[in-house]
Amino acid sequence: MNRIHFISGFALTIFISLHLFNHFISVFGAEAHIELMNILRIVYRNVIVETILLTAVSVQIISGSKLFLSKRKLVKDYFEKLQIWTGLYLGFFIIVHVGAVLIGRHILNLDTNYYFGVMGLNTFPFNLFFIPYYGFAIFSFFGHIAAIHFQKMNKRFLGLEVKQQSNFILITGIVVTVIIMYGLTGGFIGVKIPVEYDIILGK
Ligand code: HEM
Image (cartoon, rainbow, N blue to C red):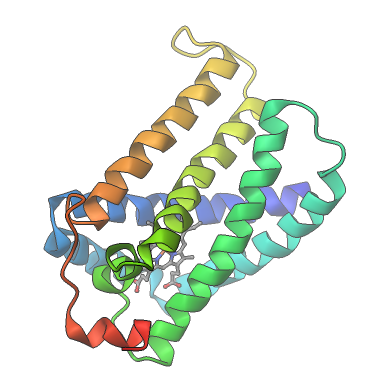
């Protein structure tokens, strides 16, 4: 089970890294984000790649849930606990998130681009849910990797002990989360969303 989870997790990590880099680019504006997404879509919206990606998501959720249930009572140290709790949150997030994207695309017939992604973040009171919802997802991705790094790495790197390396990954996660939130909220002042996206909030 560990091995299956690791392999599908590795495939997902490649997509998520590119996906978060795409969100990172929003600090240069909505157009820059949309332009990069259009390029990345050529790869991940390809029928074969998207099938592999959505299969990896399903495998990750099923194997992750089993691992969570079997390890929950055995974990003791800080990074072990971080691994199972960030994993649980990522599982919850990815089910809701991918479900929302697929509904947006296939049922509401929307272009699920930058404006679809940032709608909830830029609309009060929905942002009270969406800021922590997205923020914890980005942080959990880095937290999960920091925990796996602590488990697998066994030597000093650039003069840092393994624990310091994992803490460095965690701090990077916090910084990246804040930068992405800055980009997705138009520099914290709010993004004006085109009217065709009002349907998401039932307007
Ligand atoms: C601020 C955080 C995030 C925002 C605003 C966001 C937004 C989006 C948007 C707009 C799409 C649709 C892409 C398209 O139409 O091409 C999407 C797809 C997706 N996102 Fe995210 N995302 C975020 C974080 C994450 C994270 C942390 C994960 C993984 C844990 C993730 C996993 C996915 C997956 C698997 C897809 C489906 C790709 C597909 O099959 O087309 N996202 N996201």
